[in-house]
Amino acid sequence: MKEKKKEALNKAVGLAEKLEHLFVATADASGLPHVAASHKASLIPNGALLSVEAWFCPGTMANLKVNRHIALVVWDPKTDEGYQLLGEAEEFEDVLIMDGYAPEVEGTRTLPQVERRLVVRVDRILRFSHAPHADEEG
Image (cartoon, rainbow, N blue to C red; front, side, top):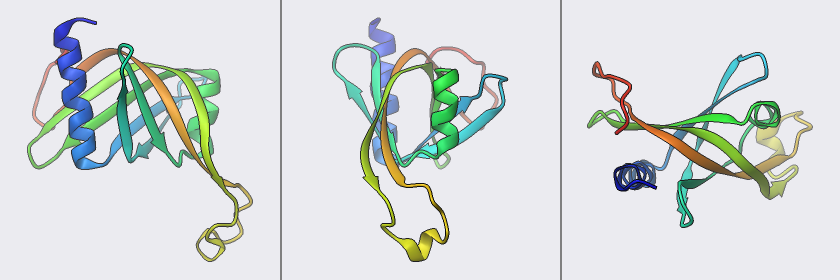
């Protein structure tokens, strides 16, 4: 991995750790987008790989089964610092499954609550901000 890309990836992960959130965008086979949120991202030492964990909804997982392209966005609105990480989900796994953990909150839902980990290969890192910007690698 090029040094500039490695530095940008480290900054993006550091910002996600500080903010404790990032957005995860996927699309189905027809291109219909879906956005989810994650609370945790960390680097996997062997290259441009990122581990992203969340209680992803079924829509995110269904999309990734037919279209592995993914965009991750971490952005701090106070400083307008942000990154868009583009790549592919290389693997995903269930980390924790809880069914009926909070039935008073879940109502009549029949789906189990599943925390999942995605391993994402980051191909491009773009700057992300509210201010006008070019989609250039950062």
